[in-house]
Each structure stands twice: as C-alpha cells, then as structure tokens.
Image 1: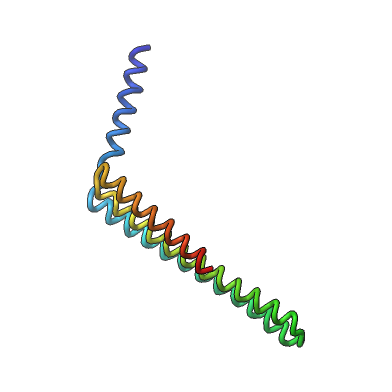
Image 2: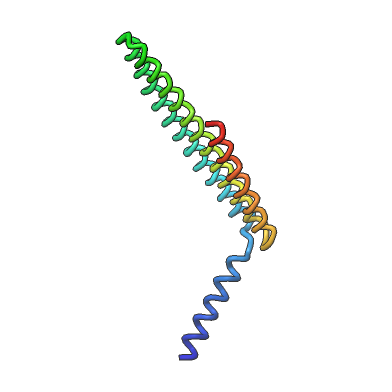
Amino acid sequence: MNLKTLCALAAAAFALTACNKSETPAEIQQDVAKAEAEGQRDVADARSDAKEATADADKDVADAVADRDADDVAEQAHDANETADRGNSKIMIAQAEATHKVAVEKCEALTDAARTQCKDDADETLDQAKEAAKTNR
C-alpha cells in the first residue's frame, strides 16, 4: 500500500517539476510558428465568412432596390450595415486571438513567475481587444 502511494507521489512531483521547465528555444520557435500559421488561418476564415455574409446582405439590398420597395431597402440596408459590423468585429477578435496565441507561446521561454505574468498580460491584452471589438460594433 505504501509503495503505491510513494509511486503516485513521485509521479505527481515529476509532473509538477516538468510544468515549471521552460521550453527550449527550438521548441518555442516551432510553437510560435505553428501559432502564427493557425492564427493566419483563423483570420482568413473570419475574413472569408465576413465577406460572404456581406455579399449576401448586399444582394438582399439589391433585390429590395429592384423591387422598388423603399421600406424594404431601408431595412435591408440597415441589416447590411449590421452584418458588416459583425464581420469586422469577428475579424478583430480573430486577429486578437491569433496575436494572443503567439504571445502565449513566446511566454514559454520564461520561467515560473515571469511566465505567469507574461500569460496574464497576454490574457489582459486579449480581453481589451475583445472589448474594443464589441465597442466598435
């Protein structure tokens, strides 16, 4: 019974010490490159989604104009503006999240308290960027 407990404690201690080790520069560089690539894909996807939604909204406006329905034109134009704003907000958030991923990966070069502070700063910057995106919307 004591052997099992001792083994469990040893495994837990090993796991905890591994968490406090900083990564090698090569690992960090690889992780940063991966985060940058993922971020670029996410931003490109957000831009594509926004472009598609805006095109659909613009088509609705054009259809309303073709129908010569002034009330519908005004409503569709309003909806198109909201769609564009939502798309811009999603792009801003995707960019902020991409930047955040890279920043967090760069934090891995640091140790203990410095790493924690770095990640906290990155989280705060992300929260501020998301808030700014909501405000702009």
